[in-house]
Amino acid sequence: MRALIKIYFFLLSRVWPKMAARQAGKLLFTPQLPVNNAEIPAPDEVLHVSEETCVKVWRGTGPTIMLLHGWSGSVSQFSDLLTRLLQHDYRVIAPVPKGHHYQGECLSHPGEFIRAVEHVLSSQAVEVHAAIGHSLGGAALALHNIRDSRFNKLVLVGAPANLTGVLNRFASMLGFNQRGLDALYDVADNRVGTSHRVLDASGNLSRIAKQALVVHDTQDKEVPFGDAEQFVTTYPYARLYKTEGLGHRRILNSPAVIDEIIDFIQ
Image (tube, rainbow, N blue to C red):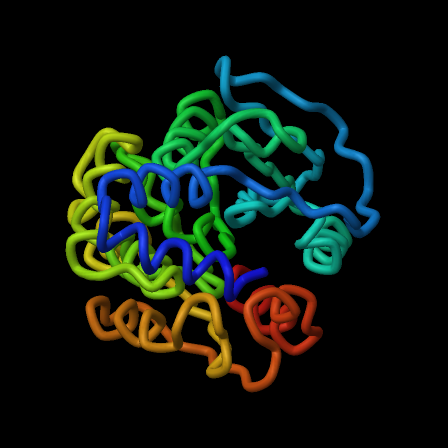
C-alpha cells in the first residue's frame, strides 16, 4: 500500500503539484491517535483552558512538571515516566492539543501544539519548573511565546529541530519533486498561519530554557539524530543524552532514559 501511495504522489506532484500538496497536507495534518494506550493513573482533574485545549492535572506537593506528547500521540506514552514523577510527588500537567482528544476529532498542525502550551502556561498560577516533550511536543515547548515563562529545565525527547526538516522528510517519503515540495510549503504555511522557516525550535531554545536535556536515539527513523545535534550545537546549556536501538517511541519508557530525566529535573 505504501508503495502505491508513493507512486501516486510521485506522479501527481509532477503533473499537478498543488493538488498533490493539498492531498499530502491533509494526510500530514490528520492525527492518527494510538489505539492501544498504556494504562496510567487517572488525573485528579481535567481543566478546559480554551475551546481547543484541555489540560490533565495530577496533584502533588512538589514542583510542577509539564508533559507534552508528540503528533498522533497521547500522555499515556509517558506511562512509566508519569508513574515515577508521581512517586516523587511532583505536580504534573499534560496539555491535550486540538485534534488529539479523540480519533477523528479534526485536522491539527504544529501551531495548535504551540497554542496548547501557551494556553496552559497562561492559565497556570504556578511556575512550571520543568517541561518534557516528545517529538513535536518537544519542538512546541521550545517555540511558545509566553513572556516570562522560561523553563528552569527542558527535556526534548526525539524532537525535530525545525518544521522545514519535517516537511522535507514527508515530501521525500511521498516521492515529491521540488515543485511539489514548494507547494507543500505553501499548504503548511497557510494551515499553520506562519512561515515554516520561522518554526525553528533549535534556534529558539536559549530563550525558552535555562538548561536543556536532549534525548535522542541514533537509530530514530522519524526524526534524524542530526536534529538533536542541532539543539546542542546552538545552545551551550543543552546536553545530549544518546541511546541506541530504542527508536522514536520505545525511548520514552526506557528505564535508563527515565533515570536520566529524573536526575536532570531534580
